[in-house]
Length: 398
Image 1 (cartoon, rainbow, N blue to C red):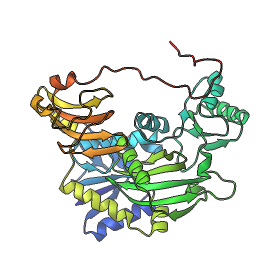
Image 2 (tube, rainbow, N blue to C red; image 1 turned 90 degrees about the vertical axis):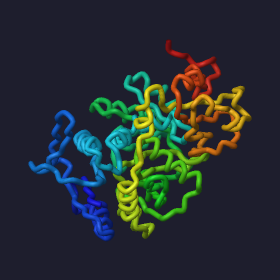
Image 3 (cartoon, helix red, strand yellow; image 1 turned 30 degrees about the vertical axis):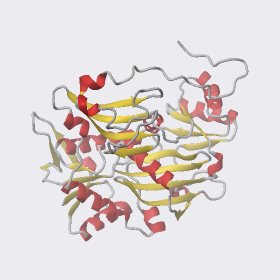
Image 4 (cartoon, rainbow, N blue to C red; image 1 turned 60 degrees about the vertical axis):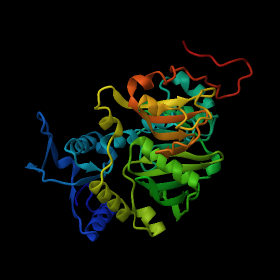
C-alpha cells in the first residue's frame, strides 16, 4: 500500500508514529504538507499537484487536518475522494466534527447522550438559555476551540452573562452547555477505528482546573470501557461520518454524554498510558479498506431507476408490531431489509425470523413507490418544557 499522511508537522509525535507503523508493515508512506497542494479541476479529470508537480498515485490518505486550515484541508481531502483514493476520514466527516454546534446538531437527532446545550445570539436570550440548560454553573465553549482552549466554566449566572457578552463583542460564537457536575473534572477519550474502540483512557483534571485535557495538565489512565460506552463512542463516530476518531465522553448519571468527536485525535497521551500500538491499528484498518473497500450504499443502490434506499418506521399500533420480518411480506413488494435500528442497537442484515417491536426502524432497499406509502407523514414532535414552570405552559413561537 502507498499511503499519504497529510500533515504540516512531520516531527509531531502522532505523525511520526503513523509513519513508523506503516514502514514496520512494509508499506510505502510519505508525509505531505496539506498547504503545498494545488487542486486542478477540469471535465472528468480531477487532479492534484504537489509542490508544482503532478502528484503520483496513492492507495490511501490519512488526513491530519489542523483546525486553522479546515477549509483548505477538507478541499484537498475532497479532491482525493474524487480521484477515488481511500481517505481514512472524509472531508464531510472532518467538517462535521470541527464545528461544535454542527456536530451536536447532528448527534441530537439520534438516541445518544449529549449534555444539554443551547446557542443564542441576542443578549436578551442569554438568561433564558442558561435557565433551559439547568442554570449556573454552566460551561461556555467557543464553537471552534480545540485542546480545551475556549472552554470556560461560569460558576454564576452573572459571570456567564459577562463572559458571553465579552466573547460576542469579539465576534465569537459561543455555546452554553450544562455542567455535568458528577463527572468531577473527568472525561473518557475513546479511540475509534472503523467499528471498534481500540483503546480508551480516563483523563482527570488536576487542582482547580475543570478541564481534563492532557494539554491542560490532566492526568491520563488506561480504562476498560463497558459495552454501553464503547457502543456509544462507535455510534458517535459513525454518525459524524468518521472512521478514525477520538470520542470524548463525560460519565453522567444517565450514562455516557458525548462532548466532542475529534477527527484528528492525538496518539501520544493514549499510547503512553495504554501501551497499545494504536498507530498500527489505524494503518492496519486503512490497508484492509484498500484491499476490500466499503461502498456508499445510498449512492450505489440508487442508480437503478425506481429503486433506492429508505427508512421505514414501525410506530406503536402498526400492523408490523409483533410480526417477523418475513411475516411483513415486504419481500413480496420487492423490498429488502438491510438493517434494523432498535433504540441504541444497530442490527445489520437481521434474520427474517426476527420479531418487530414498536419504534423499530428498518433501513430498506427496494422499489421507492412501494416504500413511499410506508413512510409515515412527518409530524412535529411534541416538546416538553426543559424547566419546570408553575405559571403555565411554555410559549411557542409562531
